[in-house]
Length: 261
Ligand code: CO8
Image 1 (cartoon, rainbow, N blue to C red):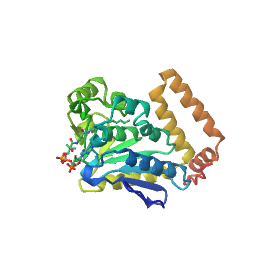
Image 2 (cartoon, rainbow, N blue to C red):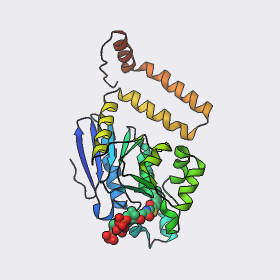
Image 3 (tube, rainbow, N blue to C red):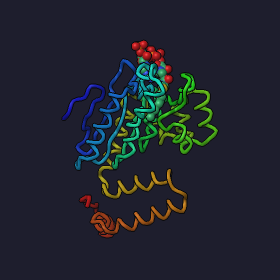
Image 4 (tube, protein in one colour):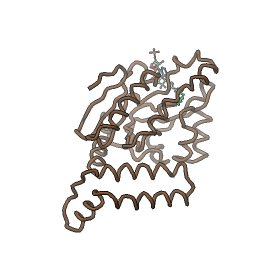
């Protein structure tokens, strides 16, 4: 396994890859080298046939406190524009397999946006989400303004983006931004995310990939296009062995043995 400087990569289960952001001194500020490693580790896991799902986490104190302000502060418009600064961040959206965020502590700015780019968010009671960019004289640049609208609606998105205030895990759950708040003890949220990833990995990987694809399509398509797309993908799954196996197993009252084919 490759060794990284800013992240830790482990296998808590043969079917699950866990990526832990590891820049504790700067609260996991998302520098360009960190993001490069993150993309590489996740893309490798995505290609690995033995992996069914991935989990992304940080430390108890911080999932990630944002893009690295010290790296950004002296940049000029010409640098960020010409080099399309932060374009690499969107590569996470190209992953085929599910990515679950297990968030403890600060998930601010780019950290909140990174969590929003994941497919499912679980939060520990200590999690704090926010888009404080307004306090730095800028605005969210990693999709926060757009993805929050879908997650929590316009008025709440405006409030977060324009005031920069943080919300608690409980508020985030009540607003539908995270699936739920998990456990009390340190590390509980990671354990729960790994257990969810393991469960997802036990399903047909083709069906899981298709499920992720159609849910994400709702961001891009009108309702009628989205419904048509969903139905067509549903139809196409009748060409897989896993559909035959899944339905036969139900009829025969046994557990399915998916071959991901
Ligand atoms: N960048 C760089 N360093 C950071 C960052 C950051 N985002 N956050 C914290 N650090 C560093 C601090 O500078 C400090 O370093 P040092 O010890 O060398 O002084 C260390 O981490 C610990 O931080 P604090 O001492 O500040 O810890 P506190 O517990 O007092 O405060 C906070 C914690 C409240 C999280 C505080 O650190 C803070 O406000 N951080 C900045 C939060 C922020 O503004 N985030 C948004 C950044 S802008 C952004 O994310 C733009 C996104 C664009 C994404 C585009 C994607 C395509």
